[in-house]
Length: 214
Picture 1 (cartoon, rainbow, N blue to C red):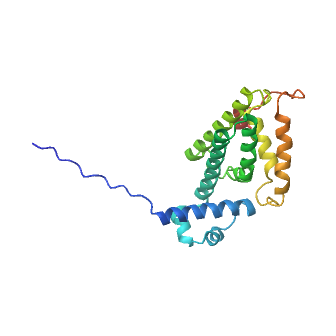
Picture 2: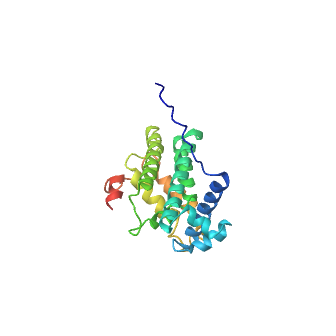
Picture 3: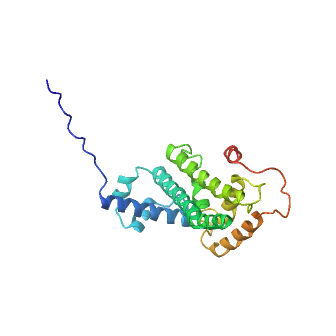
């Protein structure tokens, strides 16, 4: 008796135009969240993206889903910036500098506060994206420490806090008008990270666990 061969399962992939629309929505949302905050009307996001309201809701059933996708996309772009810095910059501290400045340009610090108590901070997509960012920051810093170029008394948490505080004000609060100061102040901070350290820092290095508890 012959065993019946099951029919090949049909895999449905999103159409190219649907993928483009989704990307346009996420890009428009990222821009408007930074400029105006998370409460910007979805209708306005649809207009900037050049799509209809129904298209936005077809991709994102509610505001939370859209905010989460925007934050995850920025986190992933930050990871790519770190990977490129490691791959393309021969100098270890130069890779750290490149990564920090690129991270600031993603306006991450303006977007992450949107994941507040009203959102699921522990959604699997967010958790995975955070882990990828934490890993690449650790790799960039470890390489600079191994080269003797980064002071040893700073941790990943120190870098994340400083970049968040220096790179952008909260979304919608003159977020774009401060751009001319950002990279200048970040470079001042980066110069303070160089080894040998000119001073002893009070307390201890801030870890990721410290940030999670804060």
